[in-house]
Image 1 (cartoon, rainbow, N blue to C red):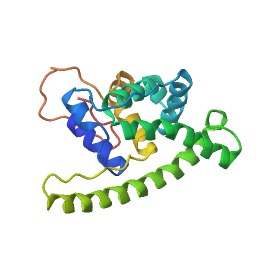
Image 2: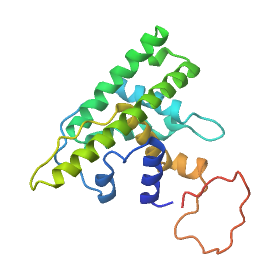
Image 3: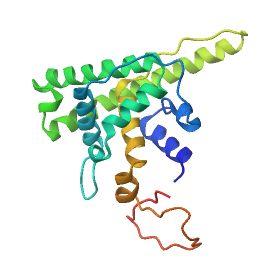
Image 4: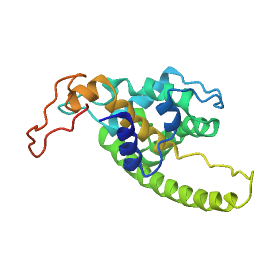
Length: 205
């Protein structure tokens, strides 16, 4: 699975274009990004969000892949300032949503409570992204009729970004690529006819 294919799969799974994907593909840093700060508590929080999305089973979960630190790097280097601010604000919003629903913060919630909460927020995020994409497509079409006209893009939903980064970070990590997926080190040997059994893991390479 190459990087472009993985980015397409992540975008499809989250109902939109991969946020910051253009910078990830080119290996460049977004020079127009703002300055955001992640505290150790934020990293720990994001580790638990990632672990709820991809929990430990027979394979390591997202926490084992250091997903919180991965999110920090991606948000800092690849996101625009509006998306950075939406992401940071989203940490607080997610925690407040948990308190409102269960009377406790996300870090104190049970795995089942966390899962139920994120499933609800995921549904809201997909609806938000769909409306956002449709609105911006219409505005882009109108702007194309007038030269030099630009449109202001709305920030993406914070949970869409968290989910995308969890999937991307996990399946490009050593635990994800070698234990959740089947992995053969490059260059490896060519085999034009590999047996496949229903339920087999996908290949990482």
